[in-house]
Image (cartoon, rainbow over all chains, first blue to last red; front, top):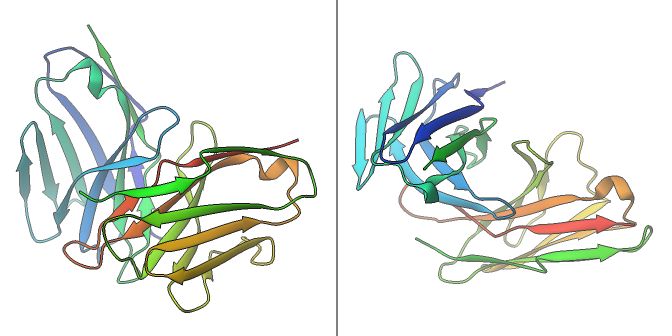
Length: 111
Length: 116
């Protein structure tokens, strides 16, 4: 079945850029999503990208999609301590609306 | 964005009792909602897809008689954990799918269920 993989942990200093990477296997993905989860909370949709796009920018967030390599990344510019959270990459599975989630990347931002 | 609420946020119940969790989309209508379960430090596991006006579709390994799902309106889906056992203790999260745009899902804040 489809699979989504992420690295588990990333540590950066406040003010630096963070890059969180994700790979997926589903060649029929239409949309790919990035969600943020803070402790004890639900998931917050950060951004999403249509599969025929290479890049999407939204304020401090930049999403890059390499469809050939099935690689997705989320870049957070000027990372702040409030960005510390778990970030999930998700792939929409076919036209069922189901999401396949990666394991989540814990972002630690040091002051 | 869009707002999805869940109620209750935390619930403690005794073994053998049933617990109902509500998921509401507050500012859009959702024909499709999803129920997930999340174990500590793990990703989300999809339990079922809830479709308004029809039966829910359960993922493999999820007992439909134990986890009853009702999607009676375009803004409300409920999950009832029947005859709860301690192993059902978990964080349950719902999402509602927006019918336009990228079909993105908006998540509720989650419900922490503890079965004693």
